[in-house]
Length: 201
Image: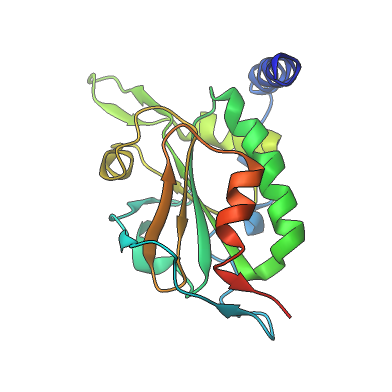
């Protein structure tokens, strides 16, 4: 675990240095925009009810990196979805992305990803606003793939009781929140909870 932390700290330091030259031009915008999750359900895939009592998904509001205002219904595609809260300063978020890549290999388009960014700064009036530059630098470095929502007001973070990243949840195909780990979670936990929800051919 300590070795993993050390690797992540080195990676984060590299990200900070890369920030001097990274820009939105470095990002494959097709990988994180509203079209990053395909609406088509793969042939033979079925979705199953949660084995607990899921709750109504708290509201997700924010803007895309292009500045388009979005809400929950804009990016849930009747598929099981991983929702992940991240910030550019979060070393464990980089580790989580490695786990998500394993899940992408395992489930392909049967599983969607939605990322909620919480990078903020204070503008000239002292108002807290989104720090989109830091978010874009992180995206360019980490290579994450999925819908990215910029939550400059941290309202969505508040809706999910998230105060520090990483936090990871699972939304069922019918739009209910079935799991939420406020301190992040392991690949093994995610695989265990996803397995009953998604049946593949």
